[in-house]
Length: 308
Ligand code: G3H
Ligand code: 13P
Ligand code: ZN
Image (cartoon, rainbow, N blue to C red; front, side, top):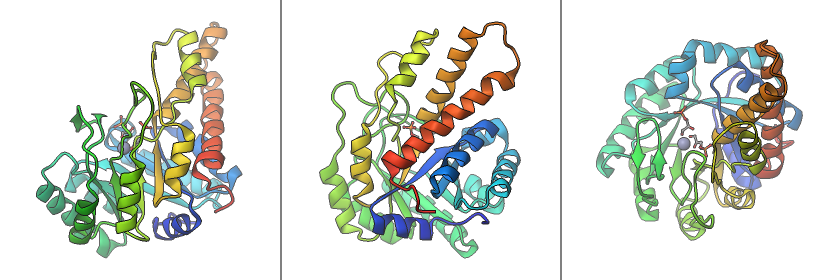
């Protein structure tokens, strides 16, 4: 199956009250781990590439890895998406380079500027058949180009106006999640009333949840047991993500859990086998750890098993 855009994927997810997992990719082992999980679960999947991933691996390498994954297993429906595109130029580069979906992240800009930038990307993407995700509201925490001390939750009426004026195809909303491993100091809380209001005002419209890692404590404990310092890390409870998936959220973003799964496995391996220095020896189990984590998420959080 060739790369596809998210339109049919999201329409089916919306109607079926499930979500498609969008997993960040940075190297071969991560691509393979995710693709093997999606294949065994017979699930659609979104491989997303951040500006940092493009800088680290290079867009050509990432696209060739995706191409190889598709050739190895053509049964998996795959979207390749730019995550948190910081500028029109980067979105254009990705569209020209074969991405089927891009995110333009103008969430740090004043409202009218976010609209203007998003619309500029939509005007370039749509004639070329490429999907555009935008963001309204701010997630607390640090992204590569955006740092916000406070959450600024998405206003439901503004969301309607934003979608109408920009023509963006999906919208990332801020309802209390944040990027990284330290999401909640006290009790985990998401603003489901707000999500319900946004979804009700935008019927049939796919919403996106960023900052949706669950930070599995087994990985945190393994990291710490084998020399890591990942104290007090907390993520979004899985049942909250499942609930969001039934409320118009069609795309759930996961990066931190991939990092934790890989790192926990590598730390454990190197600590238990100090004589080993063949990268394949520790990267193979790390790849398996990503595969198992992603398969669990597809089955128990996204609900997208068997939907390929
Ligand atoms: O939203 C942030 C993603 O986790 C990507 O992170 O910019 O470090 O690649 P990154
Ligand atoms: P996490 O840091 O919760 O994995 O969020 C990833 C994300 O939103 C990528 O855009
Ligand atoms: Zn994000």
